Amino acid sequence: MIEVTKNIPSPPYLPLVGHGHHFVGKEPHENVRTMYEFASKYGSTIKVWLGTELNILTSDLKDVEVVLGTTRFNDKAHEYLTLEPWLKEGLLTSRGKKWHSRRKVLTPAFHFKILETFIEIFERESRALLTNLDKEYRMQSISTHGFDLYNWVNLCTLDTICETAMGVSVNAQTNADSEYVRAVKTIAMVLHKRMFDILCRFDLTYRFTKLAREEKKALAVLHGFTEKVIIQRREELLKSQQIKRDDSTNETGSKRKMAFLDILLQSEVDGKPLTNLDIREEVDTFMFEGHDTTSSAVTFCFYNLALYPECQQKCFEEIIQVMGKDKSKPVTFEDLNNLHYVDLCIKETLRMFPSVPLLGRKVTEECEINGKIIPAGTNIGISPLQLGRLEELFPEPNVFKPERFEAGYSTERLSPYAYIPFSAGPRNCIGQKFAVLEIKTILANVLRHYEVEYVGDKEEELPLIAELILRTKDPLMFKIKPRVY
Image (tube, rainbow, N blue to C red; front, side, top):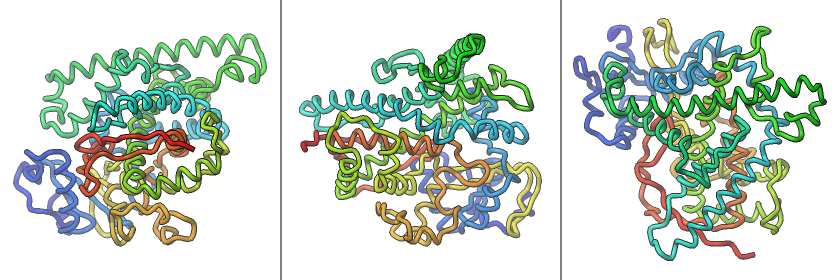
């Protein structure tokens, strides 16, 4: 295998451990810096051995296009296996025919007419977030350190995703200590540990750890909750069908908004309805993909707007221009579509801080990519985080410049594989429009009520941790001030 890949550059490595010694004993955020240094020194496509596991890391746009732009490399990399105990074979982790048929079934669930019905939920949960921010504002006189905005945003997105996915509320923002919320936090912690703790990385040693036992308990709660809701909604759907009322008046119509779950209950694959397990896989996948990812994006948006107050002011002015000065006015689908500058700020934030910092694919059989032979079993890693910070693609990459995404600006000349916060090609993020609408709603409601200030060192480069979801080494701390107008 080493002979086959000899034309792919590589940092020095050792027998058996490969490049492992470059990472052992380092903090997670230091590993991100190490990978940047490797790419800078050895080229845009390099190989990294972790033990006997071969990984190809590339920021070469020609290679990226080959990997993401076709269905040849549809299988996900080894890291995604840590998600399977929770998500099983949902859309994110499935492969082959199953992935293709599920993607076809799920695509209509993200039609704009469906998304429009979710705005009311986005609005309601972002208002609950404002209530919690008001409590933080009243506490500011006591603390000079600010508060961790991510914690509140994370509960907001959890409530939002539960209601849009399953049609039920877990009231995370008012009861952060509930069994379900604790289980979600446990799974997030498990995923972090399995990325960076050597004992937890391999199933053989992981199964005997305390963490594995905690994961098992959390999964029982998460799967049990989802299954209970599926059974309940299936029974309600059957009753409504028996009554034979029109959709506009039955329980899944105007009286009860269609959740993602309701659409799955009425879907078929090869002429057969989805089983409860099929549905649970996709609901749980939607829960994972639409929760921490959105929380990360929202928090980094506020960080950028706090660092660049002139951009925050432009967002505020646009929000007032579109929505008026009545802060009680609900956000509408039309309002969100008219927030063009806010949209630019979201795009620029996701360039600098993509919620998913690394995309991984598995090579199932030996192949050639632009003259490079890649052995079967190789993991291929593509980093939206690294691509977004390349000077040749985005001049002044560490500067927040929303205008770079304006129509007619330089990004139009870029490859569609240069800016990929939602991935690209056949396996791009199916929920990206959902995510942007939710982010916009939160930004609009918070910014028309509060001015946001970052409490940390504004000159310091943020130490980032590239897990499945992008995080910072330390919490981002903020202060807020009510807007008067």
